[in-house]
Length: 253
Ligand SMILES: *Cc1c(COP(=O)(O)O)cnc(C)c1O
Image (cartoon, rainbow, N blue to C red; front, side):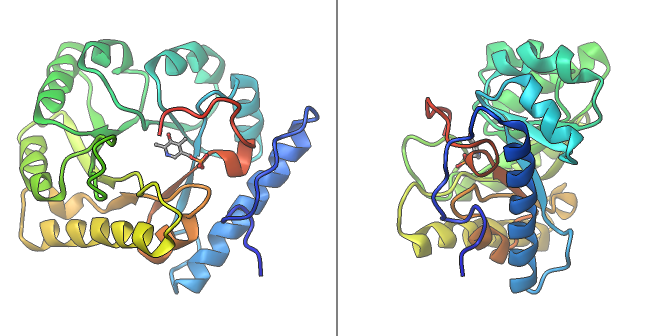
């Protein structure tokens, strides 16, 4: 049986665009529900985040009109470029790319959650900016479960320290953990990385690390492997190509 979006070939979105996109979104939802059921998890326990890099704001609006409510960008420039067109639409906006410290000021106030917190220095920089604008921000600690040198994120062994740092910064609220899966066709190897993130979350909470008890979210899994991520406990899956079609210029992962 083939699962919509999971491993199946992804065709480029046609010029017709709109219906295509709505159909793909519905198929992705069905795929997520099927994976929830298969994993014995309650329906609705996993949210779909639409990874919208390179996607024009008009297409994002189409997805929001069709019921999507959570989007994620990789680049500050794209957040800013699409901000006005999306501002009147009800949705939650996460940042899922690597954030350079010199971009913190332009991003704070424009997103609801930073999923890619990967250093104490970045946490402190964010906190200073939030104090200046009297704001707060949800964050997730990005963990590099695969250990690939090209990936951002703290090593699993360093996650506890970063969680403690965040707990000491009252304008940051830790929601959970995010990871980008191993870049490999070996499904079992990718899946074991997702299991590692879940175990890490549970250990930090179990050991009473400050702030860890409320950090329940696991953002993991993409178009090709979301069903495995859901089987390992993902609460947010990040889907790009399954909904918007193949990107002409792969970037950002
Ligand atoms: C692009 C992107 C995704 C979505 O990837 P697809 O394979 O297109 O679903 C997920 N997470 C991050 C961080 C991304 O940059």
